[in-house]
Image (cartoon, rainbow, N blue to C red; front, side, top):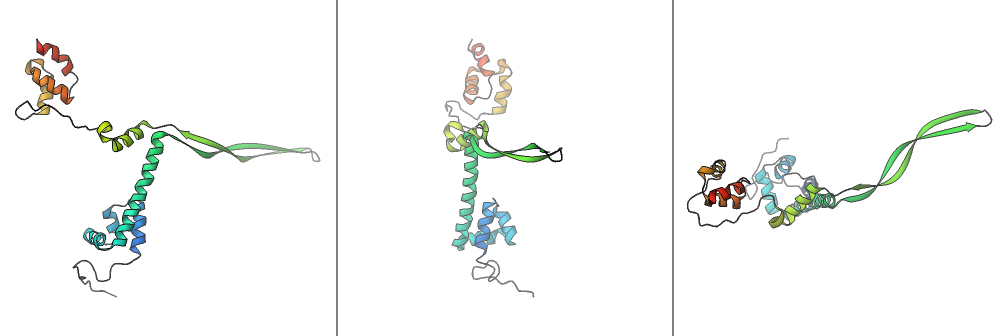
Length: 199
């Protein structure tokens, strides 16, 4: 039967649209790394309604945060193990050939059956995972992008692309610009230009 949409006292959504079981469902969605848009699509609501639920349904918000934190913790643990390397118990399944000889009938019978051998698998540390972990935990020392502190004794604006073009032609660049390029680290060739420019 058709149900007329009615605004609730907050002017959002249908009256009585909220259901307590959504708390358990949003927890599971968060564990699966669902985005807010995916969660809204799952419940068949607009993102604004989801925002309203997050603000006015504390049990819903708590379940959402808990699911996200647990999912992030699992990923962090996996990244950590990949960074330092790890060993775990496993099995290797081999093909075992079995032969049987019957003394009474003087016949030989053979077949193949699986042989399960317990082993330990070792995964060495992964350099990418190490760098990723350190770049997140110690940004100042390990981030790919670092802030460069340069002296502000140069007046006017600096066009990095123009400076790079000038570095390719020693006659178009001053000693001060070469020193600036070295500080910015934008071109190794500037090191070769420095002695010629000082003359």
